[in-house]
Image 1 (cartoon, rainbow over the protein chains, first blue to last red):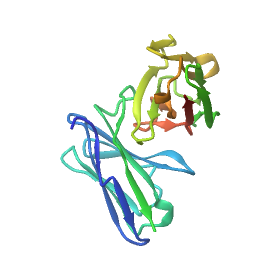
Image 2 (cartoon, rainbow over the protein chains, first blue to last red):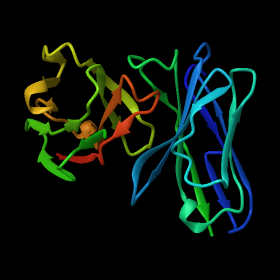
Image 3 (cartoon, rainbow over the protein chains, first blue to last red):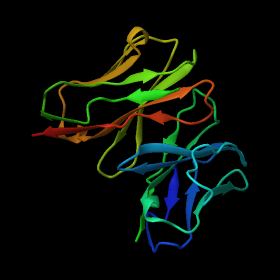
Image 4 (cartoon, rainbow over the protein chains, first blue to last red):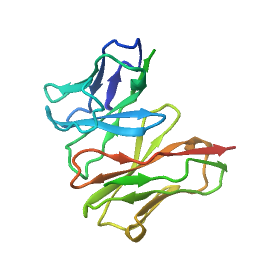
Length: 115
Length: 115
C-alpha cells in the first residue's frame, strides 16, 4: 500500500517479556518517527530517524526501549522486560525529510497490552 | 518550553451545528509549524492542515476552516454544518524550528456529532 504500515496491529504479552514492533514508512520518505499514545499521557514523542541515524532519542522513557532503522526504510522499536505501564498504542509516522515544514503521515498503530 | 493546550476535552453537538475546537500553543521559536490531525474511531491519525508561523491567513477547505492568530497564540479549527462522520478526536500539534523532528501534541478534543 501507499501509506505507513505497522505490524503487528495488536500484541498481548506477559510482563517481563521482550517485544518488537515494526514500522514500514511511505516509500521515498527518509524521516521516520515513533510516538506512544496512552490514556494518561496523550501522544508522546519517542524517537525519530533521519535516514538510519537517530538525532533525537529524548522521548524514550527508559533504557528498556530502543529502536533501529536499517537501509533507510523499515524501523523496529524494541521494548525489553515489558512492564504494565508500557501498555499503549505505538504509532509510527514518516515524512519526506525531517524538516520543520514536513508533514508527518501516521500508520494505524500497534496496540500493546502487557498483562 | 513548547506546549499545546486544547482546553476542551469533549464536545457534543447535533448534526448541522457549527463547532469550534480551540488550540493554544507556546513556543520561543520564531519559525514553527502548526498542524491539525483527526483520529476517527478506527484509530489512525489523519492529517488535516499545516500552517507556518509567517502565514496568518485563515484557510477554508470545504466545511473546515482554520483561524491562526499569533497575537493570542491560537490556531482554532471550525467545522461548519457538522456531520456524524466528523465524530472523532482532533489533535492540534506544534513543531518548532529548533526542536528537531518531533511534534508536540495537545491532549485532543473528542467531538461527538449526534444525528
